Image (cartoon, rainbow, N blue to C red):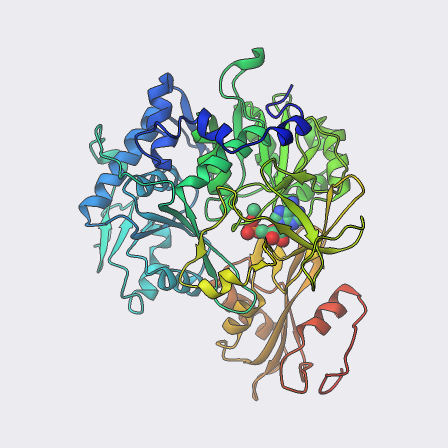
Length: 575
Ligand code: WTA
């Protein structure tokens, strides 16, 4: 028995109003996600139920009920309002996975402002371009990250306040900085939540673009409808002690700096009133298994790179832990190898079910459903209410011959679909072709309508599930004093699927030494992030270019992957 029941039946009778009805959407006094994830759950009699079990890197454990969630988000909401924030102002969350991050997310939404979560490992430049693009007025951060904000302060005129949630009073606060300590603030019992409508903006997630700067993907409060229903039917979370089983304890391993960490690490589970766990600690197989055992995790949503790392850690270590609480596993972000599915079935007694979606889609689009036969290596089928297919790369007409590679395409109109790219209507419009939304991935359909992922249709690098733009890395490389020119491509990697590799020509006076390689790598790590840092720099005398002077990434990419180089007739000089 699963939440979705029969896939075919669901397809036949599907309407998004199923979710609206279950959420009491039309009668609700507000359409605010902040209210749905805390106040409403309390109103339903679950105020004392645990919402969050948090464990820090030093083993500290904290538990919060749905009422705590309600109060904490009210308190942060009030604090922000007192700073003069208005609805639709942008508030950036720049924190590790600490409880304040989760509470702030709901607090920002409660005042009708737009929440802009950013991965806390981002360096100055990555942070700056995103804050500038969104004209963000407040950033909420921790002491350990504040130096990055200070370094970009001068060139960030829009940023009015820097809120530090763990200020210890030891050093004086600097310009625009303000301390806010949740534990020392009187909890706000009554708070007037901003009356957001379904189409009011909610979350602004930044995602890498192929050619330009990162794009801000704008979502609205109505996204809740798809996020709620996909959480229920795909992640198969169960609200109460239905089916005679214990209540679910859910673990989404994603960081809320990325869309999985908000759609399914905040909104989905909490709008269902589910208890979830957060581990704010680096990855190791031991840490993770211990965490599952300690908190009796039942549903686990993770990513292929982590699964491959667990495979590498071996079968022996699994046997040291009692993982019998697990009942459902799902994965997202990169291609999930058939071997990983087969291995997980063997070792955990449960296969990882693949889920395919994007920052732009806001919710799961294609998936292997609980209870449906899995074809290991395939992503599965579209979620009910999603019309998805594979279209020809030139005509954008659906491909009718099974097995033919084309572009994944969806009919626009599901609730969690992005509403625009922030201040970038042109790029937004370019994503639609022949009435389809084109996510930019290649796939093929088999004879039973299962989707098989083939690869991205652009130069974006997907390293360990994180999208990195070669353009961003190349631009940053040009600022390194040693670099004359560069070309950035991916190269294969056993665990991360692919990693960043840079080809670099040096300025006169610099030698291709290991020292210079390290210096440049570190420069990128600090400026952008550890993910964007090239794992290898190959110094070359010249870069392959077209006759018009454009660097041919395609050629370098093909070489790294041992693929056919293709047509090189437009090349200026071949290597
Ligand atoms: C890739 C993450 C293969 C794809 C939720 C997509 C996948 C991009 C899968 C979105 C999957 C996501 N199999 N590839 N199951 N899921 N991708 O925006 O290229 O960070 O377009 O959203 O990741 O990444 P994003």
